[in-house]
Amino acid sequence: MIISGPASQHLAVKVASILHDELALCEYRSFPDGEAYSQIISNLDNEVVIIQSTPTDKDIIYLLQLLDICKGLNISLVIPYFGYARQDKIFNNGEPMTARALASAMNPFLGDKSEVYLINIHSTSILSHFACRSRNLDATHLLAKEIENLGLRDPIVISPDKGAIAIAQTTATYLDTPFDYFQKTRLNGTEVYMIPKNVEVNAKDVVIIDDMITTGGTMATAAKLLHQQGANRIFVAAVHPVLTGNALIKLYRSGIKSILATDTLDKAISTISVASLIAEAIKFDSLRGMC
Ligand code: R5P
Image 1 (spheres, protein in one colour):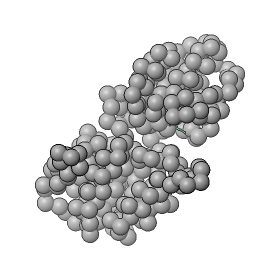
Image 2: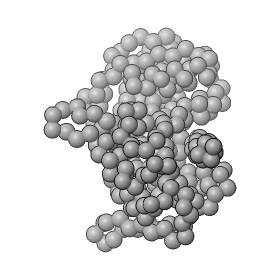
Image 3: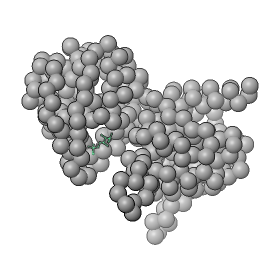
Image 4: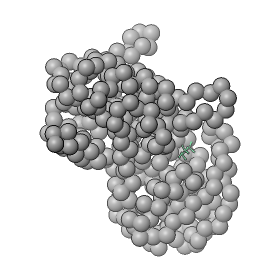
């Protein structure tokens, strides 16, 4: 039985349809003081798959509520977008490792047979904070397939910082194109500085690819640099379209042609579905469990 949290309903419907599994009827609302309320109305099987991204603090609470309702069952937990993944280290004294704190809050509900699935998690070290088996699913090939359909001319793939080199490299290999990367320093939550390294982009179509777009500052800065260096058309692609505030406006003002993103977060631009990736992983693990 597939249980969809409020943040991942479209995606959960697609996963349920691929797996021919029942989608549980759930209700989500808020009490007058803002506290979250969740209820699973359907009768539950012994084996459940919970799918819930956690872009907001409230989504984390909904997820904990679902885990509590399912306590004692065999739970597979899919968190397509894991909020706080960038708080994966203690950067300064006195700070928490929030990604670890969140995994620790979920662990009491996960048994020996449980499996946690994350998608292009910002730092794979987060997997180790889960007490049960955990996997990082890679959606890069899904993005690369769509990029191939753009009909690019003499393309190059660029990672806007060192952190996304692996995604850029995989994409470039799939497309059989060169790739390069920028060096980024974050100045604050919305601004970044990039060393204006010269990249061979003159008259080329460029794809800038990253794990996530949050405020759009990283992509917009990279796009401006690439335009200055004579790039032809610039496309941006990301697994997780967080897109806070005026991110979309910022991106289009920087001269990009279009944005490709997956549905780990349910946005208007989430046209590439990770449903098959999730379904295949669940099917594979459930077959393995029978062996
Ligand atoms: C950070 O290391 C991530 O990989 C992204 O580069 C970052 O989250 C993008 O943030 P923003 O869109 O706010 O620049």
